Image 1 (cartoon, rainbow, N blue to C red):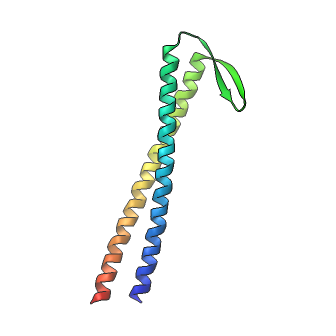
Image 2: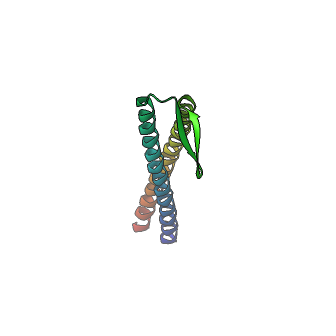
Image 3: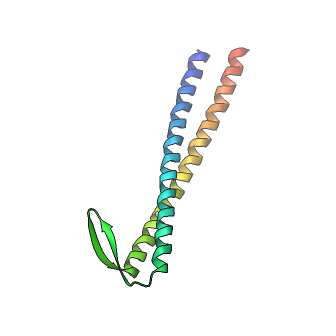
Length: 113
């Protein structure tokens, strides 16, 4: 009985571990996108041009430097919020994993007695 319960706890811990991997993958992708936005904003600041082109699907659209900066900063802010949400989720899942480890440890100790 205790062995069956321990196996269920291990399976649950494995599912949580997979969730962590997914969260970490998403965080990595967001961090890369944020770096790209930062580099783009730096380049925009360096240029003296007031009109620029941005990619929208398969089309280049002429836009003002100010409008492009505004859009990039909004996108950066949204990604920052998403990143914070992922970090909170990561902490919650890690806490669940730790709780399961403790339960597994207690289960195996009572199974040995």
